[in-house]
Length: 107
Image (cartoon, rainbow, N blue to C red; front, top):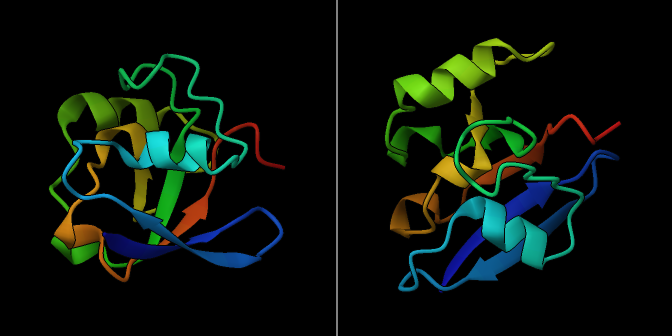
């Protein structure tokens, strides 16, 4: 199990645990944990409604693909640590990370 922290739109942080051996994405874990993540495209990196900011732990993640970067660059708010949750696989590299929700449905 991997442990990481999620910060919601109100700044409240909660530690989550997720299995690292099922090939799940961060988006799937966030939705299963009932966070307000639209994920309109179903995880295809086409809508950016699962936009998150990696507050801590970015160094261990794989680099964003060109497709992901194209979506992020079209957002009204784009941060140096912005990522699409659908493109981050749950694994050891996420251990101890802090993820801030930034999707367009988050006010």
